[in-house]
Image (cartoon, rainbow, N blue to C red):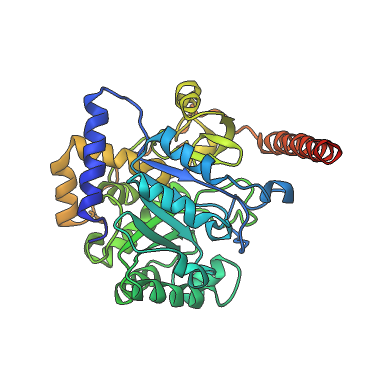
Length: 385
Ligand code: SF4
């Protein structure tokens, strides 16, 4: 079962609790990025081009656990950068599990075998290994040969030790539906517990800008994939049936950016995991002071083609809670790959993109310089004392 019953029950109870309290906006998954540093440099990544002083920053164990407590989401996805480069990652994971939150540790798996002994299988813990397709597709996506084989060897080692292992797979416009379908078939043979699939977000700073999917292309691609797997039922997706239905053009959803709030070394990122348009100091400030209506497809140019799970899975989950029979019908019958698609959201009124990245980088660099100067002055004063 891609999502264990314990998790389904706890997340379901959490959603019901939020609704009973009349909360309009609440988080489902905390995206925790304790560092941006990575041991790969993928062409479609918009996270790793920061200057070294920023790549050298780490969230401490206390900062990570404070973010978990402050946010309160029942699921924590630890991403990055490469989380296994963080020297205290196992203590961060243990602290989150102790709080009875479900941890998805996202990794490219290059360090997984080396660090496996530091972790213990737990009903609250899942390895989420990045694999963007079969050997050829994945090594092309991460711009380095041999990564797929190392990831598969690590997956086998983790499965042999009794861990749950998921795959997170990002697709671009060069994805071939037949090949993706065969790749999903192969994952079953590997004993993978669940697949998370998503179209790539068009990060403005990713080195490769040519291969991001437009909305219509995304829907056509996912229809072509699901058609080859009984409407998606052939595979073990760890995503809601309605999110898959949305990817295939059967649901018209607005994104729920607060569903996956993001904490990075900059602070709480506005408005979502994909866009860094400002940072709040606290989770409450993020929720209360972000102009949420300024974002989303139809509202903002940078959101025009976004169909990424971190923006829309929460929308699909909320829809499933409101319309459980619809969700059940898609789960049982599979995603419709033949009928007419829902109308597309008009982009006529969207506001133009703002480019604010370099301002945030300069501000962070200035903060780092001030902190370093203070720490040197403090060390000198202690020596003299
Ligand atoms: S559509 Fe929503 S989730 Fe996607 S980039 Fe825009 S705000 Fe973020």
